[in-house]
Length: 173
Image 1 (tube, rainbow, N blue to C red):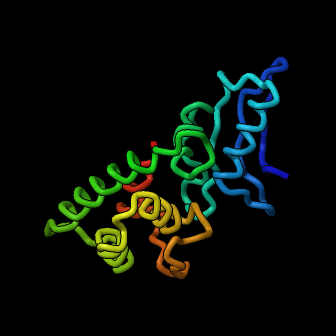
Image 2 (cartoon, rainbow, N blue to C red):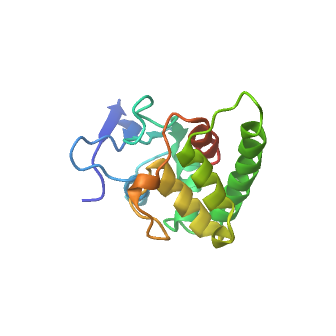
């Protein structure tokens, strides 16, 4: 089984797919594999909309919808598609988001949570010089991956509706 979720077919054309499954909870890499498998079987994905379920976020259950091609490009850094170089691009966006967040957090009116402060320090540390590990750790902190490249405990995950999480999510689009 590659993935579970919801698909929509309109007049014989696949138009929508997501990984929203109540019990199985497939991750975004499994969704990417399912889209790739459909494409390899001759399914036209040019008009396909992909939406990822976000179980960690209690307010926004889904990430913003993307075209199938954009979704697959965003997964290149995860090593599931050819030409896996996207981690470098995403890592640059993450570093820029961290600087912007740190600048904003230094204002008198800003109130950072302790977890956000810890995550910011951790992500900026020397341990995160490897782009792929940085991307993987951010996915873990956001609750979008079950594994941390540093075997971190899940209790370090940041609040899904917090400002740091919002800024980091934007890096993947």
